Length: 272
Image (cartoon, rainbow, N blue to C red; front, top):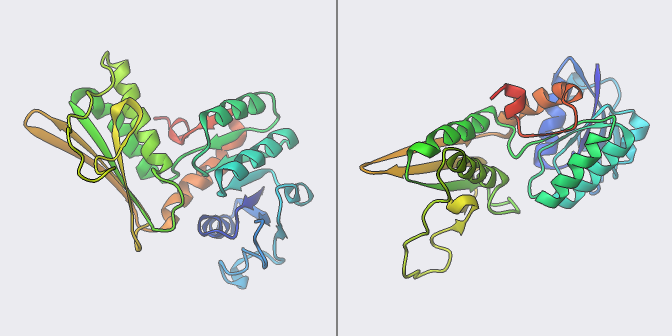
């Protein structure tokens, strides 16, 4: 079985990853790591009868993966912590699957160089929901045929960053599709008077405006609105539960060893 460690295991996504790994017969959860964990973060998901014979190692730093002999580390932490964790993984030959967002382009360039010369590989994705990956691909197809696009992303009120990594990636995909088709950035916003600052959202890549909503009860949702003469097109994806991300996480965990260097997004793993 493939030996897996989870970084950020006490968080909401981390706990969900622990459950998914424990339930997969091809994987073994050998380490749960979280700097703020006072008790085993994997103790609550699932019941003891469903888990391993012994509790997984609980640590507070990425270095604890070494003692557990983890082969793959799954990271859902914060941007600075994830970059440090990926550096450690690259230096110590541990494959990394990372869903943490907010990592800068400069850090990504550094990580690409590190994993290029490492025995380990990495997959870094803004969103592990397969439907979200398809949504971005559909937006890439639609963009050259429409005259304008705006992104509305909606998340739970505990999300720390805005806009979401998925929204930024979607805007980048749309902007790239416009350039590839011979077009360019979208025309400037024609709004002349803004009554409330920020009401037109953020000016994202390629002129794609991005709007962020934060409300209790939401998980992760995004709608992309395209407009053209006399028509509109809406492409929407909804994650109602964090379990929606787990098939993509497990796919990446099992595929990362065969993906040299740093792979950005799940698209290459899905062949799209």
